[in-house]
Length: 360
Ligand code: DP6
Image (cartoon, rainbow, N blue to C red; front, side, top):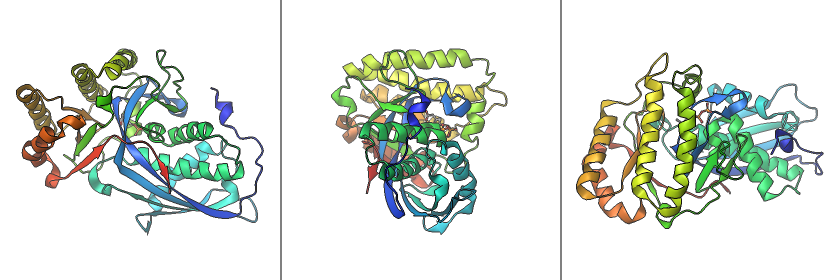
C-alpha cells in the first residue's frame, strides 16, 4: 500500500455542522517501537496488546466556515477546561495530516477530550489521545464520502494516528496489533498498523495488565527525544534486527500458547528498551529503585509459585504486570500484598486486553 492511497478523491457530500465522539484505548507494546525515521516511519516492527480501561474520549464538533481559514481554527478543552498549552501539538498534527484531509481549514473545530486515567499518572496519553482525534476527523471525512469502506476507514485512521504519535497507530483496533513492515507478517506496513493476522492461542485472549504507577511525575525523556537517541546509537542496527527476529519468534509463541517463551521475549524487550536508553549519548536511567524491587519480586514469585506472571515497561518507571486470566486468583493477591506498596500512594490500574476504539 502506498501513501497515495490515503489522498482523498472528490467528496460527494456537503457537511455544514455536526459532532462525533470516539473512545480510543491505550496499548502496551510487547515488542517495542524505539527509533524512527522521517515522517513517523518506525525503525522496526512492533506488536502490542490493545488495552481496555485506559482510554481517551474525544468529542469533535465541527462547523463549516463561510470562507476557508488561512490557519487551522479550533478550541481545545481537556477535562472541561480550555487547554491552550496542548494546542501547538494539535496544530503540528493537523499540519502533518492536512494533505490527507484537505477539508481541515474549511471548518472551525471544538475538541473536548478527557482521559479515563488520571492526568498525572505517568501514563502516556498520546496513543489514546491521538488515535481518538484521528478517528473523529476521519468520521467527518466519512460523512463527506459515505462510500468509504470500513477497511479503508481503519487503515486510514491508523495512518493518520501514526502521524500524531507512532504508538497511536496501534490503538484503532484490538486485540493484538502489529505496526511496521515485517517480512514474516503478511499485510504489515510502516504506514499503518494491522490486526495480527495469524492464529492466537486461547490463553492470550483475556490477558490482564495491572499497571503499577511507580512514578507519576512528568516524563523525564519525551518520546521525541527518546527516539532520537537511536540515531547514531552504537547498538541501533543490532536492536532493530532483534525486533524483527523477536516478532518472528513471537508468532509460534502466540500460536502455541508457549508462556515461558512469551515471558522471555516480553521481559527481554522491556529491558532492551531501557538498555538502549542507558547506552545512548546522552544516557538516561528511567527505572526507579521501586521498579527494580517490583521486577525482583515478580521473578521470585514466579520461581516459588510456578506462575506465568511477567512484566513489561514503557519509557518510564511504571511497571505493567501481565498475566493470563486463569492465574488472576493467585497473581492479583500477590500484586496487592507485595507490589502495590512500591507504587506512589499505592496507585495502580487494573486493565486488560481490549478490542479497540468505539464510536458513541
Ligand atoms: C516506549 O509513540 O510515544 O512506548 O511517535 O514520538 O509519539 P512518538 O512516540 P511514542 O513512542 C512509544 C515508545 C514506547 C514503545 C512502544 O509503545 O512501542
